Every structure is written in C-alpha cells, then in structure tokens.
Length: 462
Length: 82
Image (tube, rainbow over all chains, first blue to last red; front, side, top):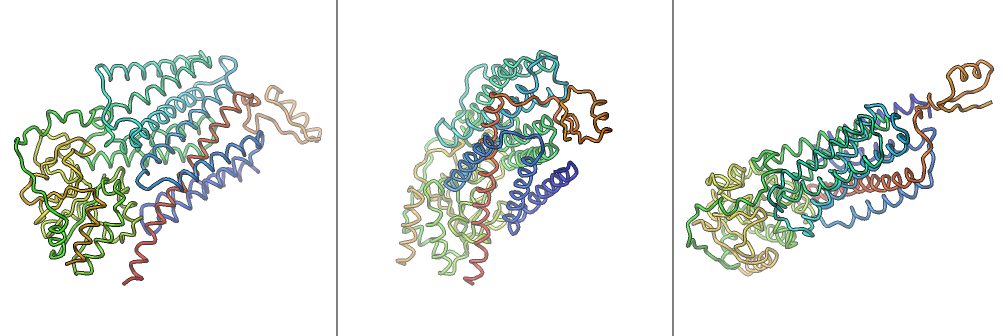
C-alpha cells in the first residue's frame, strides 16, 4: 500500500471517529455513530496491518483473537448494573496496552545508550507513566465498584506525602532516562512506581466518586495512547488518543459540575470522611413516619401526577421491571407518570437511563433534573426508589454537609414524598438525609422490588 | 533486481544502484530506521499489548452498541402502542 493511500485511509478513520462522536450526542443517531466509529477502527487496524515491514502476523492474530473473545464476551455478559466496573476494566486495559507498547518500543530501540532522541524518549516515558497510572487506578476503581475492596475512602496519615513522593520518584526516573541514562531497568522501575501511584491515588477516593475517577482515568488513557502515537509515528493514534483525552476531560468536568465539586476536591477530598462533623446540626430524637404498601397504593392511585425518582438501589434490587409495571398500572388509571433522573443517578452519567431502557421504560417518560424540578411543585406524589444522596435537601440547606451545593432533585417541593428504602442506613456517600424526617415524607421500609410488587398488587385490588 | 538496503548503508549506494536500473527500497525511506528486528521480549510484551488493546476496542464498541440498542427500540415501541 502506498504511503499516500495509507495516509488517506487514516484520514478517513479520523473523520469517522469525529462523526461518531457527533452522532453519539443525539439518541436517534447514537447507535449509528458507535457503528461508524467501530468501522473506522476496523479500517485503521486493517491499514496498519497491511503496512510494509511488518512481521509476526501469526502471533498478532492469536493476540487479537484472544482480545476479541475477552472483550466481546465481557461486553455481552456484563449486567447493566455492573456497567461502570466494565468501563473501568476496559479503560484500564487500554492504558495498560499503551504502557506495554511504550515498554516494548523502549526495549526495541534502546539497547545502546544514546539511540533515542529526546522527543522519542519523552513520548515513550509519558506513555509508560500515564498508561500505567491509568491501568492501576482503573483496576482499583473496578475493585471498589465490584465491592472487592471497601467503597469507603482508605486513608492514613501522610498519605498525600507518600503519593507525592512516589509520583516524584517516577518523574525523576523519567528525567534521568531522558537525560541519557537509557537503561531498561529504569523504565521498568518507572512503570512500577506509576502502578503503585495509580493504586494509592485511587484508594482514598470514595466509591461514590469512582465514576469521576474512571472518567478522568479515561482521559489519561487517551493521552497515553496519544503519546504512544508519537512513539510509533502514527498520526491516527495521536488524533484518536486525543479525542479520547478531550472527551474524557469534558465528561470529568461535567460530572464535577453536577456534584458542585471541583475535580481537586473529588481526588484529594476523601469524600465521606467528613461525615462525623458534617450534618451534625440535625437535632437528636427525630422521628420518621413509616407507611405500608397499601397506603402508598391509595396515595398513588388517586394522584394526578406522580414522579418516580430511581436510584442505584432500584437497580441493585433488579426492580426496574416492577417499576415500569407499576407505572403502566397507574397510567391505566389516568395517573401522569414521569421519571426524574439525576445526572449522577446510578453509578455514572446515563447509567440510570440505560437501566430503565433495559426495562422498557419509554424514553419520553425520562426527564432530566432541571426539567423535573420545574414540575415537582405541581406533583402530588414522588416515589423515591433507592435514591438517597441525589434527593438530599441538606445539599441546599446545610452548609456543613459534605454535599452542600450539589444540585439535587428537589422532591421535598412535591405535595407528598414516599421513600422506599430497606433501612435508615446512609447512602453511598455515607451522609445522613433529613428528607427522611420531613413532614411530607413517609418511609416504606422494604426492598425496592418487594415494595413495588406489593404496591402494584394493592393498586390492582383497589 | 529488487534490493532492500538497511539503514547503515549510505544513501549514495541506493542512488548508484537505482542508476543501474535496480529497484531499491531502503529501511530509512520506509520509516523503519532505528527499528531493529523484534526480539523475544518485544514480541511477548507486544503480544500482551495487542490482547489488551483489542479487548478494549472490541469490548468498548460492543458494550456501547448493546446499551444504545435498548434505547433505540423504546420510542418506536411506544409509538406502535399508541
């Protein structure tokens, strides 16, 4: 294949990636966009494989077959509730791939000192450093979300100092190598330090913040891939890595905004640790009002407008289908049903939409936070299903609360609120919720699935 | 004759051979300069890199398609129902 043709096909790939991103922003064309991106990727791989001077096709074919099977089976089998973990895993292996390529290139190019010029070694080391951090950090994020590790922030005295020291060591190794000490063990040591840093850097971040971390690490993977592109002199990799880096960065910032927290606060704030101090203003001896499925059924059946606010608890209970069934039952009785979706409902942006879509909830019943907030003062009953922090009024009223300033779904503005919850235990962020003690609030203590089944049965019996 | 010249061969040699009517490809022209043949370690590392990279790419596109597929179906079903 001629160089011109190669470059032209790579340009086509890049255009397909950009169009894919564009299409993904509208629900109508999102699937087409993803397929276009996949096609572009296939083209890029074919073009790379048909370049001259390549060897080891057999080995590559085996590696690609293994990767394809692992990726495709994982992607097919994963439960929709476990999607954030899956994203963390896929992102991590991407970062790992970038780090490995840079290690291989270094091994290949630098048997003798002085073989590398500075921009080559800088690219190799950046790719190794960032890719390794992304790999190790993503694995910890995966472990936290999968609850292999505690979701609580893991902190110890002097943690930031230790982290800074390890990062400093890694950067020092990089500088030494760029300065001309092109020893392989230095690069291996750098990768080891970066891996340790990746682990330690994610450990103190609470489980609730993992989506932000994954999004940030996703941006890291993109930048690592881009650096690898510089190493391999492949424009297509530089550009596509940068597209990932840029979109990951934008998503990270967007999520920070949805929680009204700076990224620095997410990364270094050890969220959830402040619980003892925060929210202490709430007086002791508060009472909650417990209700029954039958009472809730009556409330819902005679309401005009009902809003469901689903949270991750709903998905954990696998109750999306029961939720949709209850919604349909109420609609038959002439009740107007809407779903209010917080931007960080579930475990990552759009996660709750996916979970409800899986349960055949019509897309046009899903409303974003701002839309539903405008509707809530005219709403008769809000049914909070396994959501907690995203409806916590302390975010608006209690400056000492760790989530103060976070935009919430203002369910307390509706005429009545029913919270379905298994117990009074705090939510994922570990923060007390004054909503539960509100005058308009009644609590239905039950598993979301059992509660929805009972309410539906009671509605039918009316 | 088809001749491939390694990067340590001077450029004049290529010119001279071309002048004599041979087809000459050089490692340098093909952008392969500074790239020794891959040894076993490189191959092993590269193997794992390709496994991870492919898993990332294939898994990412497949799982995204799986999610988007669910979205697309819903509004049309709703319209049919109405």
